[in-house]
Length: 84
Image (cartoon, rainbow, N blue to C red; front, side, top):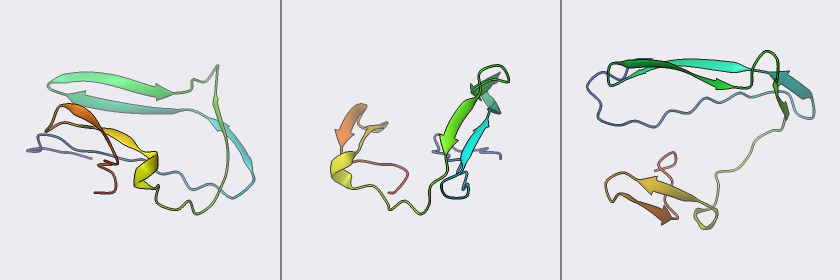
């Protein structure tokens, strides 16, 4: 994925496992931001991330979320850049 020309972007990685199954693993995301490369990990081969599969989660309620608004430079209740 390339975001050339974008000042800011929100990116989501969605894994849709089968419901009620136990999973274990790790993920590595290689990113390059402002000419600097780095790897971001969720779990490791030695200490794996674990999760239980679930299904069809509804969009979260605005009352349940806070997010940082870059334009206002502060945390705002009810703001979620992933859902507009």
